[in-house]
Length: 150
Image 1 (spheres, rainbow, N blue to C red):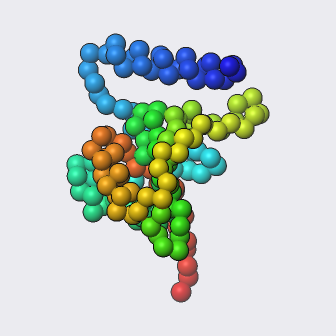
Image 2 (image 1 turned 90 degrees about the horizontal axis):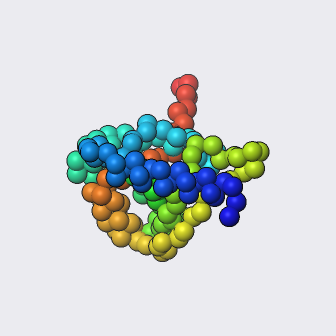
Image 3 (image 1 turned 180 degrees about the horizontal axis):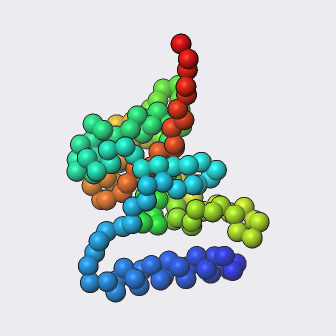
């Protein structure tokens, strides 16, 4: 086992111990944004209302591109696989390893595990709704604003 893998495992154990030793369960830490795989990911707009059950406010990115669901260190990456039909999604899970994707000048990536492939948009929507009820937060790739002079 590499030194990085050992450090990651020790960190996970410490997080688990901290979670069980606290008297109050404040829920997972929610961050406004983070950098991951050379992209900036931001908390979905209206996430408080979405978490309360207003799924009409789920960002369009969840139907047209990709997004990350995050609950503490557990993350789920959902991506549209077939852009022609818009009806084939892939779902991967991974554990958050931190904002930096380099370690001692060595590029690192978390271990992605595919958990679903070829899901329809309806199935993916149900999966998303279930994860939101479980407390996951939606993160979308930062939107780039374009200034067009007319």
